[in-house]
Amino acid sequence: MEWKEILTRLIKNKLSLFGLIIILFFVLVAVFAPYLAPPRSPEDAYEIPRAGWQVEPQPPREGYLFGTAQGSYDIFYGMVWGTRTAFRIGVIVVGLSSLFGIIIGTLSAYYGGIIDEFFMRITDVFMSIPFLVAAMVLTTILGKGLDNVMIALVTFGWMGTARLMRSQVLEIKNEEFVQASIALGASDTRIIFKHIIANCIFPVLIQAFMRMGSMVITASALSFLGVGAPEGYADWGQMITFARDWILGGQGSALKYWYTVVIPGTAIMLFSLSWNLIGDAFRDILDPKLN
Amino acid sequence: MAENLLEVNNLKKYFPVKAGIFKRTVAHVKAVDDISFAVEEGETLGLVGESGCGKSTTGRTILRLLEATAGEVLFEGKNVMELDKKEMRAIRRDMQIIFQDPYASLNPRMTVADIVGEPLDIHNLAKNKKERNEKVKEILENVGLGAEYMNRYPHEFSGGQRQRIGVARALAVDPKLIIADEPVSALDVSVQAQVVNLLQDLQKEYGLTYLFIAHDLSVVKHISDRVAVMYLGKLVELTDKKELFRNPMHPYTQSLLSAIPEADPKKKKDRIILEGDVPSPVDPPSGCRFHPRCPKAFEPCPVKEPEFKEYGDGHFAACHLLDQ
Image 1 (cartoon, helix red, strand yellow):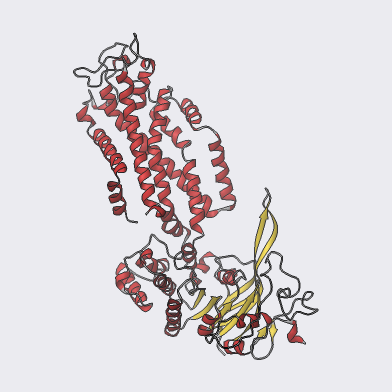
Image 2 (cartoon, rainbow over the protein chains, first blue to last red):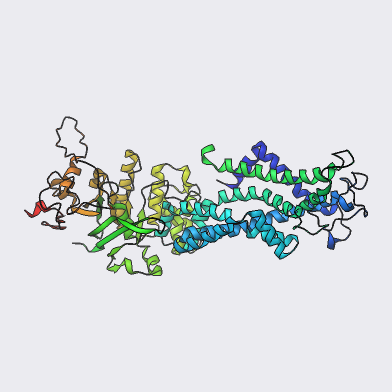
């Protein structure tokens, strides 16, 4: 199936169109961040400006569209620049972990035997540790900071792709067209790239779309648990963290500080939802039984 | 007599059966068990037998798509089994394969031009893109497909057309030997005839030698010069086509021939119906492998394995009856 056709069908499906529009919205926000929320100085653009030194969150008002969070951090600024962070985490973590997964899965399945055994046992070891706990421990060891969060997420995020790729390659490598290519004298590289990967990349792609959203949630969770971005860094997880002590409201009003939770929460939810919608539609399009 | 292009000597292919947590080999599937034959240059040797008798395995082992357990395969006097990776790649230009399933044998994500052009790329047979396209066009025309199909994908074709693409791919390297692994058994009868005729025309045009694997005797009768009959990993009979159909020596061949449907419904036929199923190749019967199902089995059959030897004028067979 051609890319053009896939794209037309993504647009025709209402749910995936909704997903695409939201993603497009976030892309625009990320691209135009310097205009939407001009930083004080370009060097520390990711540093959220503070409206003062007040601890208690303040509701939306003139100049602070979404209000201010704990410590008087500007929520609007944090959300706008946090969009960039979300994309950076999503693209880098999913990209790198998918790449590792594809390489390991393909080598395991294509060469089989002892190589397969070796890689798959390593995969098992990594899979045996709960993802969030492992990522937390590694981030703690490496130290606070978004780069370390990403390293931790990549380190413990490639196994699913590796297994998926392995099962795909095992299926494809015994197809007759692969045998035909061997009979023609093709090199291993040619067979792997032209025949095998070309025929099993789509499920991995779908999975990658699905993981885009969940990676951002996980990174936010790590921030929330206090091992993510340093305080004041523009990141959606950070914004949720600011809300931690104010979720229950106060002074007889449970919804008093709603803006601290609802705004970053909605952004994270929409972001991950739209990737999932696209992934879902993508899967339906590529499933020959549903065509 | 023409020279032997391909000589297969004592070829064996056993597949290990692994069981238990330590994956110990507990048994072997003796898919091909000690077979020898030769294919002369320019001829078509038909290889027939029931499903699971090892025909396809033989073909794939000759091409080293599967590694043989034992034996040698001489192609133009060179032992294919001993070649290293580089030499093997070079010799693949001379021996090609056409697969049974026209759907599985073409990469669904490649255009026809890329599928047929792949052998040219691998062996650097075209200097540039233009020359490659010219060559692909020429080959496609030779198999009866127009140049307008070049940029289409395999799923846009019918079974017969796909099989023509498969033939074109095999032809692209200008091979000497083509192993046709049941090339028509997945096609409609009307299309079968077209593809078989195409294969015959190409043989004349390119001077090809075929090892034609099939389970359909009428197709084999049409295309082959000589026919080899296989049963449970062993050759039971090998002779000239006419001789085989006139004078089948082995009881298994006799029963196979009696199963060919006759066009005349009124004609009385003596069908030899075999009892039971093909035994498991993991634990084949002792002595002659055919003896549990053979209508003519006698004392030596379960005990002693019959020798595959010549009974006059290139007619080989393996049966104790013939020694009496």
